[in-house]
View 1 (tube, rainbow, N blue to C red):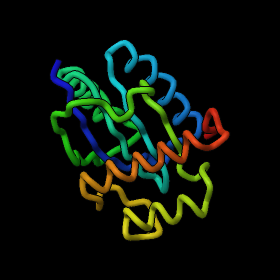
View 2: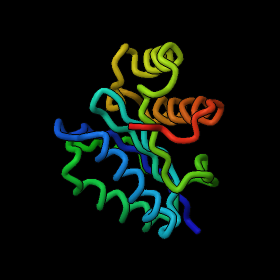
View 3: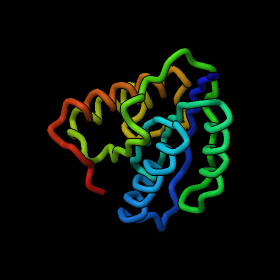
View 4: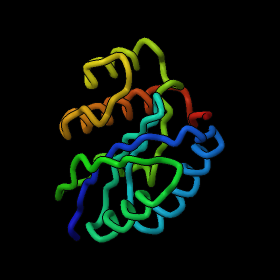
Length: 150
């Protein structure tokens, strides 16, 4: 199996509601589980940063479906590379609203990787995006929160 990791950012539509985010999460988890896709989606300041992991053809198919979704725009492909193993294998797709995690921790993390107090994933390198997402995943897993409310 040829595993790949795809990282992209996009800007949320102004009309995006908390219900839309919940729907994205629910539908993505179901579809990705069927397609063997794992990953993480972070949202803050009307910006998305997402990592998809899986078989190359399925990752590509999933990304093309996502790009056509009208709930966001201006997708920027940050990286698509072959990988030896998955980093987010426990999630078919976890969606995390960064504003729901500890403010001081998240502010420090955003500043560390974005170089700005505002979440700007399209200004981050592939390595910064990956490290940021891994730290967010660790914070999320260590929190008592089982689900993020949007």
